[in-house]
Image 1 (cartoon, helix red, strand yellow):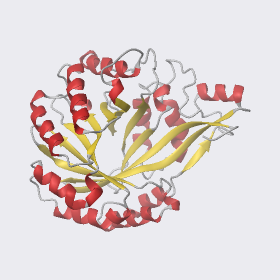
Image 2 (cartoon, helix red, strand yellow; image 1 turned 180 degrees about the vertical axis):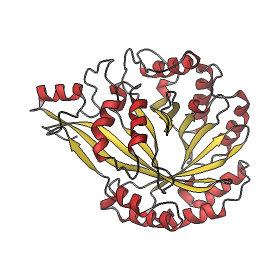
Image 3 (tube, helix red, strand yellow; image 1 turned 120 degrees about the vertical axis):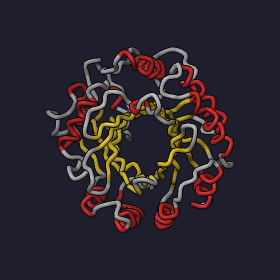
Length: 364
């Protein structure tokens, strides 16, 4: 029953799951005012979207206790009559594109993607228009180039400037063997001139030198020695490192490294402690937030919590409690270190909440 969608109604909202999860989201990471804005933002998203994973993007230093919010959806089944709320007319083409990816029928993009994400830049204010992030099934550059071309056609030139095409093509051609495109981001919430976000995987196979060489090859011309000195310290403890870059007619100054440790439970993996200690030493992470991350992993069951659980899920469970149980699973998905020549370095954590139906006669 993994990732089940149980007859959600259009009136249901993803905000119900955020409300259910609030008690386990540390206020040192996300304060009440920011969480209220996350709930308001999630109210525009139907419940069935939140039954796939969602992520809270949190700063790790003490400069902010606000967060952004992302919803993911696997494209292995159709969602008829899928509808997002809060879109104004000027964003109707984005709404239509998202709906076509999720609904029934043929779609040129759908067969090339395994998942899409909606990323809301919430911060201190609820933002109704999300960015659209596409995860290719096959990340080879040629396939990714097709995806970029198709999404630009589907969006009718909005949110992805045609002038960026040459630089995007250069990036794909420069990708080394065994490297691929993990994710393609259309940051619609940032306006018509927003860059295209690319998350590039496989550059870490030969260590940081390969990432640095790639950046030099594609024309990134900012001094990043301190940034990669920090990465050198955490590199031995990282299982996967993806490079995130923003593209316009050039490579934009701000870059990021997405740091993944396969064991998502920090209590069971010493690597988390090593990495977080290095981030604290660099002034990018406070001890209070380290403590919260190290203790974040866990799960919450509907048993004893029916009153705060989403009603649709609670009603289904009451009728089938001998067969299944509803859970919210918490984990730290990954960390990210960012570099901006004007603002210096920063670090973020991505907290993951996923809903699971556990079949009581088998495994999750």
